[in-house]
Length: 487
Image 1 (cartoon, rainbow, N blue to C red):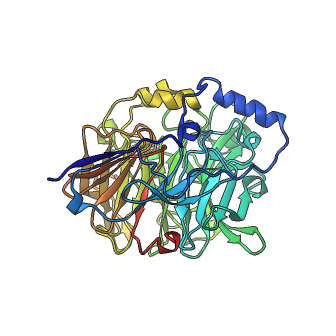
Image 2 (image 1 turned 135 degrees about the vertical axis):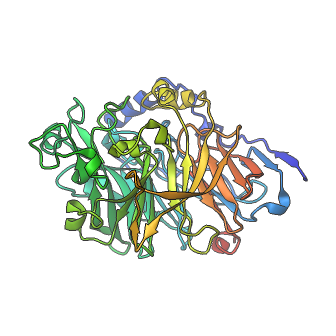
Image 3 (image 1 turned 180 degrees about the vertical axis):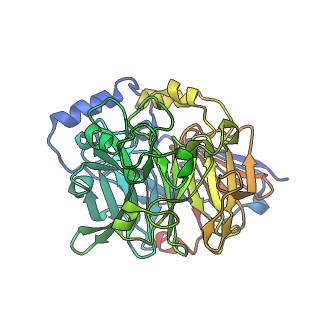
């Protein structure tokens, strides 16, 4: 085994990536500044020059097994959301070969490289709009050109969804048809929640997670809301007998118990906390990950808005498949739980080893640790670095019969474990991701540790990268895929 370590000193990113400066007061200070100033467009921020060496460490253990490509690195942190919203493409030596400048900041999210060489990204333009929102909320969606300049932009404030305020959060996805899927928080009143049998906390506002499909018009800089799915439309509950969705939880595995768990600190009014989004064009299905339920959910996308809202068993907006924690639909116990605060559930793309299987990055973070970290801000971001544990990755294949997801005799959804990986030195307490590469390796991201590891199918670590900033989920592209960015 050949092994070498390349360490490069990085000074460029001290100003933009250090979360420790005035940690206790950073969030409050930014909020006061935002409230005191009128809304205005920020200046474009340049992060790094082409050729700058920004990777702090590259530890290549198995050079013959390395997937040769370029790392896509987008800064994001779920808790310390006052970060510059920048992305870079890095070569094998950790040097910048392309950058996308930015006029946004903030958010625990990623961005996606488009075939045009531009980005689909989300971030914060008006911090006043996201004050008081749950973790990783943003107010702006952008499609950019190759330089990072926006060629299309959408403010959450301009979306009309049942007359309720929304914010974007965590994840979005470019679809093959050019549309955009994006996760949202929808603000609803306790009265509206109660009418649906949902006791969702004592605050003035509760949040229902959802998914929007948006059709962008780049020429007119406009949009069309073509489809949506709302958590509150697909609840089952056993606390309010007068509500239409009252019933036995175990009798409705296709619906979601709005009162599981009994409480969730520190933000009891956010009861789903969806944190990743994927789409399978062949099946026309959407895959989401619910942090709080410790589950992944598959939703049918081949519906009208009305069908997605109403749902019916096996079709429509109700869950087609759920996996990871059967206790949430009263068909299992804690010992049956597989996931703990997982992120980045995604289908392996067609043409890649394991195509059609589902990869799940399981953070395996205990709830007591999350409670110690708190609800967000720079101080919480620092606290997360002190958590200990071992994360793991699951590759599963749901059991399907005649196009329908199969349940076991015990009533829980079935899936076969195809691949499992963990390492005693790899722990990502928040965020993180797992992505399959063309040679069968898997690219793993530890957001908090600013690390990306590439591992072989036999579990061996091929390379360890120590990056310039936290990143939600890193990607690796071949030279052919990014040829238009390497000029």
